[in-house]
Image (tube, rainbow, N blue to C red):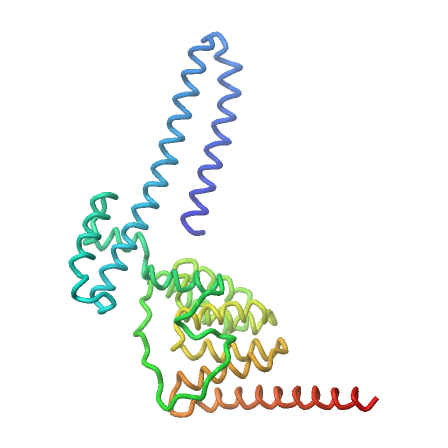
Length: 296
């Protein structure tokens, strides 16, 4: 269970306990008088409000750290021009001072964003909202295959606990225990929501369980998080094909071939060929149907 749901349950349990305590106070301390009882509940209310404010402040600090990390990376990777670097540093200083955070504290930064980045998290948000413009959209029309493989953005950072769940999920897949594999991959995704490997693996487990709609959703998130992870394109192509979306399947395999480079792997080319044949068959059937209707 992730920390936030656990915290929410703890808060609900605290409220229930307080209401039970309230009944006992009213029944056993009636002699204390209205002023004493009211004072007690005011104190309890202030404590709850303090806890709520503290949790909110913690979330704000984490977000501030994530923003600082994003600004630092933007300077380091050249996104921000050298002329604007000074302005960025001033902005970072203002944010750090205002939210009382230290961007140079590795432990605090890990607590804020784990092994992700604000940009990758927002990329998944855009994908969910259907607004992605920088990464290739899984259902978009494809252009001609490029002659060389696009460069990878580098290895995906890993979380040791998430990696353990992934390994257990892989073992469950080998044993054909797909339900268990899905649960284990989900635990890995909870710890690292934008990791394309975990998402792609769960897509494979969903497809093996004949849950192809869920497989498409996971595979689309995976290729949005890292379009260079070609296994996700292959799994997206398969799931779309089984669901009857031959054109979408063909486009997914085409993207996989582009990102693999050198003409693509045999498996990717075979998937593309199968999907393309189905598209051509459907187009032919459609044309024949139109001709028949015109004849009548």
